[in-house]
Each structure stands twice: as structure tokens, then as C-alpha cells.
Image (tube, rainbow, N blue to C red; front, side):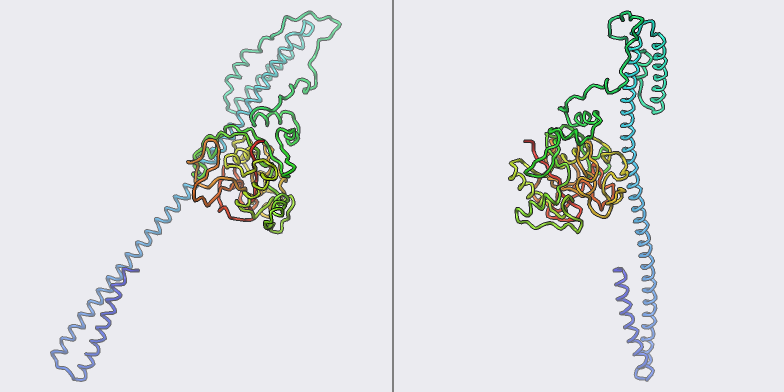
Amino acid sequence: MTDKEPYTSKIKELQGALSSAHEEKVRLATGKVDMVEHQALRQEVESLRKTTKELHQELEQANQQGRLIEDEVEDKNGLIEQLNAELDGLKQALQTAEERRQKAEEDRLQAESRAAVILDKLESDSQGAVVYSSSGKSSALFKGAALGAGACLLVLELVALGMGGSELFSRLLAGPRPPSVTPPQPIAQSAPPPRPSPNPAARRPKPKPATGPVEQQVEAAQSEDLDPIKVRSDGNRIHEDPEAGYALVALQGGSFMMGNRTGVIVEESPYHEVSLKPYLIGRSEVSFALYDRFAQATGRPLPDDNGWGRGSMPVINVSWEDAQALARWLSQRTGKNYRLPTEAEWEYAAGGGRESPYWWGYEPGKNNANCFNCNSQYDRRSPAPVETFKVNPFGLHSTAGNVQEWVQDCYRKGYLDAAADGSALEFAGCDQRVVRGGAFNKPADSMKLTRRSSSPASNQVAHLGIRLARDPD
């Protein structure tokens, strides 16, 4: 401790004086000095001893003060660590509460939608019962009783869910809407009244062509009860480019809210609206097969596969600069503008129109993706082939987990400089590029939809790959 140095130096000086005094004492014992000088030396020695004792006491006091200060600093550091831990816990609790609130809101909307469908069906059946003749009175009474029972069950469901079903409840109290048909004609006794078709598909309207926003296209595809991949393979959604050997999904763009809506995580804030133009984005990550073809054609070195295989495996150990070179090569071969997606385009496509932390819901679940703790056969071991896991609502594979993906943007903490049109952030001196999506060797939390990270543009690592985008024809 620096405060001790003056005392240590003084003690050494006194020790030297004592040594000199001792020598004088020896000289006195031999009778080489007179008694006056002897007395003076004795007094000097006593004075030096007293001074030395005082200095030792002061040094001990300084040591005690130093120890007290160290203890106080340790206590304050412990308090700071405790406060930081409590703050992290509050942030996590706030984020969890917000995620649960969002899920509850989704459940409420779905329940109200189902309730409205049930109510319309009950009203439709009751109207059908009204047009029967007097010979069908028993059927009408039966349907009226069914309507009443269904209405009671519907109200009980809404009350149990704690949802705002006041409009639906008022419709129930008002009773069925009057039929908008002409008065019924008498039906011959020999002819039984017509009955609805028992086949529900016969009453289901055919879905309209998916020409609206992407969300409407997804709803139309799902309403047909068909495999979503087949629905999206109608020529309007999935584009196979033979020259490129890479499948892309066409998205119509539109407005969405980007970032973390809680505002707790600074890196993902502020929560802001972005309006995107139509674009296409890769249905999966770029595979080794495609990248190796590009590397061999241009004389570039083949990236290491870490012993996990090539072919349909996602290409890894490639830099942001390598991704730019691949996009330029594909653009020259096809005459189309291939590029990396912007960060906004990536988040919009990865979410598939959902606002939950993962496109499939609020928890990692089992075998939905490949990460450190995703409960898949690939967890922590290696990437999986590019089309291993199920697609999101927009038809994209592995937007969460497997390998992280480069995007076009320069990295900056937060979205204060983000463009409202979703264009990439570029600035002079940019040495870090944004990376999105999570990876096989990273925890599930890192692959949440809004999570961001960064890496130097020249970095080549085993958990980082490429997903390309391009402009419409």
C-alpha cells in the first residue's frame, strides 16, 4: 500500500541511527569517550526508541484504516452485484410477463373467432329450421333447443376465459336474425323437407386466390387443409431458379412492428414500424452444394465442413465478404439481383407473421429447431441438413437455430438509426455486420425472433452461414 512507504522509510532511517548509537555505546565501554558525551548519546538513543514506537503505532493505525476501507469496498461491490442480479431478474420477469400477455391476447382472439363461427353456425341452423312447414315443427323445436344450449355453452366459455364477449352475448340475447328469404311455400305431405348436406366440405366456400398481403396468403393456404409446401408451390410463392439452384419464397412485403416490444433490451429497441417492399428470400440456408459450385467456378478456396459433411448441409466457415461474392456470382449468372437480406427483411420473414418469441410459440418445445437445448437429435453436435425442420408460416426452413445467418446491415446497438423502409444500415468505418437466427451450439434464448448479434465481416466460424435474398423480376 502506498500510504505505508513514508513510515517504512522512516523506520529504516531510525534503525540506522540505532545502529550508530550501538557503535557509540561500544566505544564508550572501551573508555574512548568522556562521560558527558556518553550521557548525550544515551538521551539520543532513548529519543530514537520513543520515535520508533510512535511510528509503529501510526503504521498500525494506517493498516487498520486500510483494512476498513477494503472491507467497505467489498461490501459495496457485493451490494452492486446483488442489485445487478435483481435488475436482471426484473428484466427477465418483465419480458416473461409480456410474452405471457401476448400469448393470452392470441388465445383471446382465437377464442372469440371460434365463438363467432359457432354463433353464426347456430344462427344459420335456426334460420333453416324456421322455413320448415308445420310438419317440421318438432325439428324446429329441436334446433331451437340446440341453439339455446349452444348459446349457454358459448357464454360460459367466454366467461371462463375472462374475455370481452359483450357483443357476442348481446347477439345471443337478441335471438336469431330474421331469415332474408321469401315466405315459405307449402310442402307436399309426400315430399320430405330438404335437409342440409351432411358433408361439411359441400358448404365450405372455395378459398379465394392468394393475391393480397402475405398474411392473407398464409391464411388462404391454411384454410385449404393442404400441405403448406404444396400450396406455396403454385408458381406465385416459391421460385426455383435453375441457373442458381436455389429456391426462394416471394413475400409481398407490407408493414410490421420490429424489435422488442417491451423496450427492456436496449439492443432490440426501440420497437418501431417498418414498411417493406416485395422481395424474395431463400427458403433455406445456402448449402455446401451451391457454395462449392460457386467456389470451384471462381477459384476460391473451399470452406471447411468441420467433418460434418457437405452436399445438403448448410455452408459454414464463410465470411460476410464470401456471402457478397456468392451473391455477385449468382447475379451475373442469372441476370437477377441476388443479395443478402436486410435485417428488417430477415426479421419479417423469420417471424412468419407471428409476434411470439419463436414463430411456433412461446417456448422452445421439442424438435422445432436445432440449438443447444432444443431437444433435437442435432443439439450441440452439428448443424442439420438445410431442410430438416418444419417450415414457418411463410414457408422458410430454420430461421431459428441450426446456423446463424449474415445480413446486409452494419451493426449498431439499438434501432435509433433504423430506416422506416427496412433498408440496410450502412456507415463509414463499419467493421461489424449484423448476425441473426441462433445456432446449433447456442442456447434457445439466442434464437428468439428479435435477438441480435454481430461479427467482423471477415470472420469465418463453424456456426455462421448464409441465407440469400433477391429483388423481384
